[in-house]
Every structure is written in C-alpha cells, then in structure tokens.
Image 1 (cartoon, helix red, strand yellow):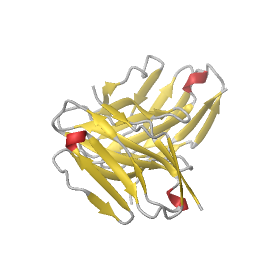
Image 2 (cartoon, chains in turn blue, cyan):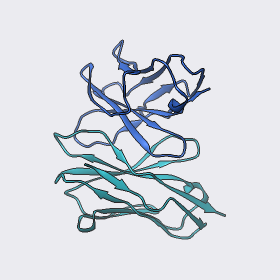
Image 3 (spheres, chains in turn green, purple):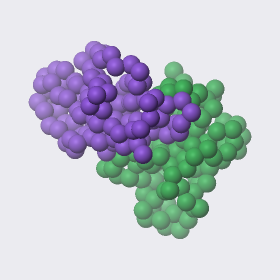
Image 4 (cartoon, rainbow over the protein chains, first blue to last red):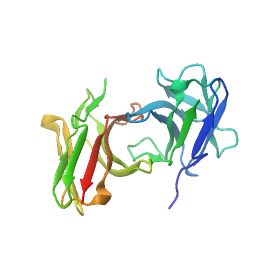
Length: 114
Length: 116
C-alpha cells in the first residue's frame, strides 16, 4: 500500500541551527501539508502546498519556515533558525484531490531543539 | 471559525469494557467532513474513519462504531469490548467541504488507556 515517508524519524539540533525535514508524498498526490504536534498537545496545521506554491498557511508558519518541492517527489520543511519552542513532532500529509478524501499522514519526524 | 472539542482528556477502562469517546464540532459550513484518527504510543497518525456532512448514517467496523448527529454537532466514537491494543490517543478532526480550505482542524485528543 502506498505511504507517505518522512525522514529522519528523529532529529536533535542546537538552537539557532537550520533544519530540513523531508517527506516523500504518495506519487500521484497533488496536495501536500505539514502539521505540527507539540508533545502532549493537539495536531496543528502549518501549511498547505499545491501546484508548487503555498495555498494556505497558519499564523504559526512565520518567516522562519519555508517549504518547497525541489524535485517533484520530495516535499521539505525548512526551519531557518530553530528555537526551543520548535521542538515537536512534525507530520507530512498528502491528498490526491480536494474532495474530502482522508489525508495520508507520514509517521512523523520528532524534532528536539536543545 | 471551525472548532473541535474533545472534552474527555483521559479515559481509563478495563479490558472488555465498552467506551465512548465524545467529539463536538463547530462550523458554519453546510458541507464538511469529519474524521477520527488514532495515535498509538509509537506516534504515527492512523486514519480510522471519514464522514461527510450529508451522510448521517451510523457506521460500524468490527468493534468500532461511530454515531454522527448533526442536530447536536457530535461525532462520537465507541469501542466495544475494548482491548489493550486500543490504548492510544484518539483525535477527532474537521475540514471544510468542497471549495473551502482542505486543512484539518483537530481536537485536543482523548487518551484512552485499556488495562488488562
């Protein structure tokens, strides 16, 4: 069964460093998302991406965040200068269409900023 | 604005008990979708069910059942004869219908512990 793959599963980084979280969505999907879950809290929407541009972003997704799909398969989330409060589980998700099909989530990347 | 409320933060039951997880949602849309996801201790999000706003039929899948009531804006989830493997955090989520944002709005989750 096709699945969304995220790497790495766990990343530890120093405060102020840049990190790139990687996702390989399901191959025929067109809509891509990043969500964040701070430990013990709810899952929060960060950004949606379609046709090589951001279609929607939350207030969490400030200038230190960026996304891109550099090669038609990978979908990346970059955090330019990490802060302690960026420590969270980051989930990538994809959808084939906008018609209400359930989002397919990756297994998540746990980011720890020290 | 869209909102999902899961008032039960934690529930603890003994194996074989039935348990119902509550979900109440708020939306001004006439078309929307509701979801339940399971998050086991390993951390991934596992899709359980999707229901659209036009379909109020209840659904049963094995030991799982869902009760969707538009009149009370609720989409409750019942596990019958619970098992230890059901221990997880369960999230209810809402998204707008066609033409609207496709982002999911999650509730805070209910942590279910099933004890042997």
